[in-house]
Length: 422
Image 1 (tube, rainbow, N blue to C red):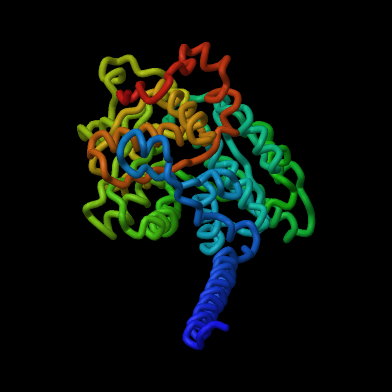
Image 2 (cartoon, rainbow, N blue to C red; image 1 turned 30 degrees about the vertical axis):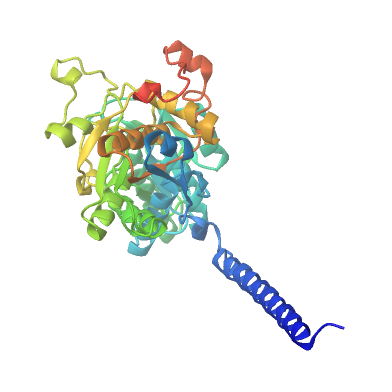
């Protein structure tokens, strides 16, 4: 028979083991409950917008010696960062009374913003009318039509031209308001004058082919100049990045189209910590690089009088511009980098091969910018960028081997040598 001391020690050991087992079980049960609380149900589609994951891009981090993090905006319900903008624009318009339930939101867009508006608008009882340049990837207009939006494809022209897709979208909002007003007046008068409601053919209008009979007016989203765009990122994307990094980041970089993302995020981060450096990455044909680095809004080609009618001589979509929008004017930037189509294409294929990330053209360009920032500030830093959308919206162009081959852009790199990393 074992000595009493041994029996006592054994009992204590068993007791300790039972205590630890119970404690661990309780911890894991509580932890699971806590995690379930954090992953709460969302009340409808609009509450699912935002709070996207921030992931470490392993291949780029290993290659540069920096922590390169990407905010996965392609996981928003509408598939892109523009969901945030669409939500903010529509909510503010409804609150101000400029948009009514049953109204039509119009926008001139290369695709992603329009898709987001068409996704969000039905949640508020509204419809969408989109004017899109006909050189945008065809799948974007197909998605818009599937979402129930009215889509007009028009030829690309200068923003100064009355038939630029943005200017047409602005007109459509005014026409929708005129159409709705005529309908209300007709109803008040107790009769319907179809000719007056539809517009005279002499003035070029036939509203019945553009707007539904129950149209409650129109609202031009104006993503380039509407500061709701800036506020979506100042109040949402920026604070999320700050929280997800625990305030421990050294730099942020992104390309700009409307300028809302880079402006909203950079302004918020700068207010939290002025030591955080914010940068622009700019595609070919855009004048923003020169504006940020030299204070002059023109490219070398324009200075030599060789500006093209469609100056955005790039395969990237949704980024690059030759004017300062109200949104971009809010940006707090420390510098800019120039990206090329070749670099964007090679980056997209590199990330797909090494990280399983299937990204669109603007996301790929942002990652080019992240590597450029890492090379400029050196190893040991944390750099954040935006993964705007996936490659699913770029199948006919940016992710199409035959299309790229025709432009001499077939990817050939084995690694990151196209950015000077062997």
